[in-house]
Amino acid sequence: MTTSSHGLTAPFALARFRDGDSVRLGLVSGDRIRAVSDDDLGAAGLNAFLAHPDWDRLGALAGAAAGPEPVEGWMPLADVVLTAPVEPRQVVQAGANYREHVIELVVAGLTQDPSRSPEEAREFAAKMMDDRRANGEPYFFLGLPTVVVGDDVPLVLPGYSEVHDWELELAVVIGTEAFRVSREDALAHVAGYTIVNDVTTRDLVFRKDMKEIGTDWFRAKNAPGFLPTGPFLVPAPFVAGQDLTVRLDLNGDTMQNGSTSDLLFDIPALISAASQTTALLPGDLLLTGSPPGNGQHWKRFLRDGDVMTGSISGLGTQVVRCLAEGPAV
Image (cartoon, rainbow, N blue to C red; front, side):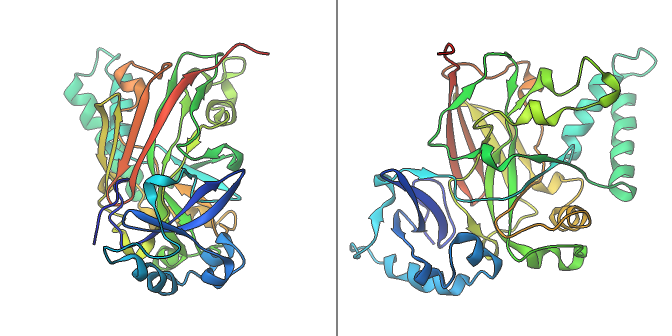
């Protein structure tokens, strides 16, 4: 097994790359990529393939690039511009799903109460999270699929706020349609995994004009480009999804460094719970939550010129460059 220059360790993966004004589906093996057609897939496009993924079919194709010599049809990965590797019709997002992250948030609020010491506040918060894991349910909201972009697109920071934040997440890519599936059957509906940075404008999360409404995820999370995704779609058989390191560096400094073993609700629980309400379709994204270390924790938010480098074990690395929004034209 080789590691590509993008940090991919799987024997092969899918990606999408730019070809002039169009985007093509590609098969990645090591540091090489080749375009794949519907004939190669045995299906009419990416989502149709993911509905019944035949990874052995693509594995046989990827084997041609295993040797040291150039092979016809394969290009150096460094010579192409990768974009988002998926075309979801729905983006379902799990909130407050990392135990340690939520404990930090709860403790920050409780320590403002002088009746509790920091230790007592942490013990209270930990008990609350363990009870939620045992007896509660996942918390979901929706993102717009039009916000999904590759890291080839700079993240333009809207000028209406100065508190845009990062949230690196493991994302499940749905394969076979999942509707009212059990936890036991849930993983059979996973085609693969990818990386998503769920960018959030913090001062828009809670409504100020009518606090009774609560959170406003539409405004806080759906500005153009707020879901940088990829660069790879890694087949599920190559990913051990319950103990992956999720790391985000900002300008070279590590801000998030957590593990998916800290999920309050694991991937089967999330898929099952979400599918009780709506059918999850082939190619859809299910985000699993973000570990501790957001900008809100560090009191440091995104600025013009920042570079976010996000990686998840075996899934590669995405590099997102931030730009301030220019004046309206």
